[in-house]
Length: 79
Image (cartoon, rainbow, N blue to C red; front, side):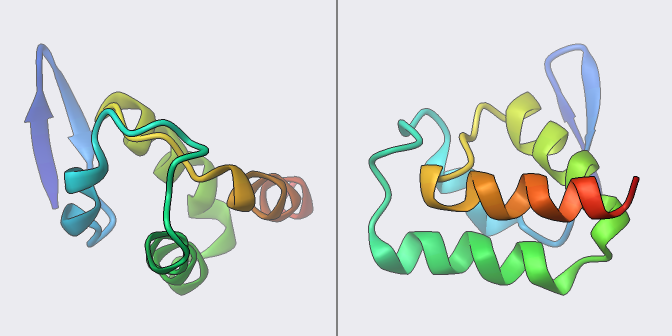
């Protein structure tokens, strides 16, 4: 699914529910919120994780601090 944000176009990864976290600081998530992000991240193909993070950034959604190391490990494995 693709949605327009500002002047650009943003890809969604069946994660529209995460839009409710727009503007929240990366260190402010509750455990249930973090698990929701984790679920989305691990249901996509590893090579899509970087694009997903870019999509989150374009939507002003910060990846939870607790998942950053995991996400970058997945990205590094695909290189």
